[in-house]
Length: 217
Image (cartoon, rainbow, N blue to C red; front, side, top):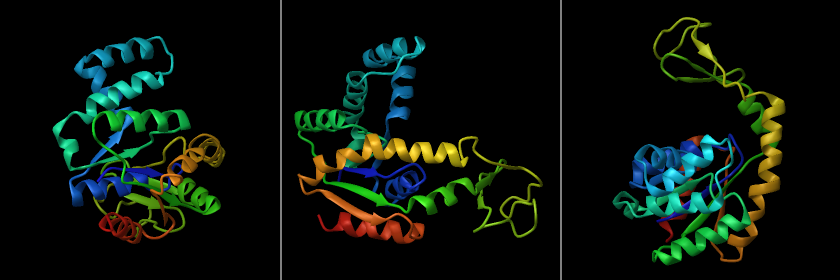
């Protein structure tokens, strides 16, 4: 089963991908992780990417496609993959289609996590975590039981927030998603493979909805 998870930053794509990896043996493919791995491994495409990155330039679609092609040839992908963060544009979606066809592969579903943007801003800007163990908290929905002490590991005053979890930055990221990534949906809707789930539901409910979609195949 090969899928794309779509949704704006903070919609929970990474969380759901991790669950699918554990439950179904699928592999999450993140372009950032693949780029770093290819550069570290010194593959031919990785060398090209390193040259571009060292120069401070953006990696081209051609290089990203090459790195994804290398990754899709690895045996662990046989259990299925989850693309998160790619494709982002119509051109990338069409390039991906050609790449998969050349390998005798295809996408089964594009699953969009539908969110309420105002609620999402509240969800993201209020979150913080324990710097020691990573336990997550929220200003409104999940405060430590004892002020400034982590429920999980007992660390005192060790909480942190992501520097980009501020309202202006979050709203800019949502605008960028609407402008650049959301427009690829019509391409996949024409193929009849888009499915939508309520991304604002509890994590376990979102997971159950995704599992139901995958089990229909």
